[in-house]
Length: 175
Image 1 (spheres, rainbow, N blue to C red):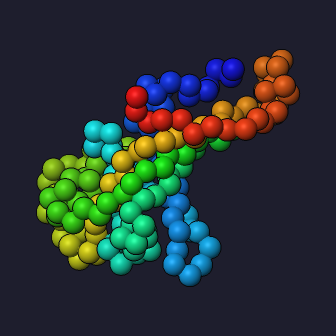
Image 2 (cartoon, rainbow, N blue to C red; image 1 turned 30 degrees about the vertical axis):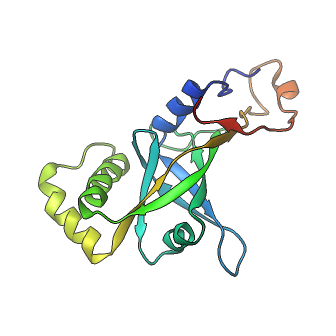
């Protein structure tokens, strides 16, 4: 087993809580599946991100009621290399409550800035959320999939052996 395997529920939750960039995957009505990179915050166990109400992510949630997201590992300044990720599947819902949307926007803005958004900016953020008709998408994780990364030029003497991929398994989010 590699050092970076997320074998326990606690490790998978910790990974999601400490990384805030994900690729949202969803089915489209008359086209191949689509993907979109977003930043997210946590609200308890739920993963929350923003989109415009008329974007395809929101339409897919209305249509299917579920999403897949691929949480990407990051360092302080960039995405991790070699890439590491955790795929999460679960039901999703649209939240239109503007106070919640603004709270989410303040949190996501802090992630993007690398420091909290000042409370004094809240009226400007609220105005932008209303003007852009933003909504929050809430994903309730049910299952996960993880494949640990190993760089082929690793100093690890067993790196070549670890590069052999086996079959993955869906793992539960909760007990």
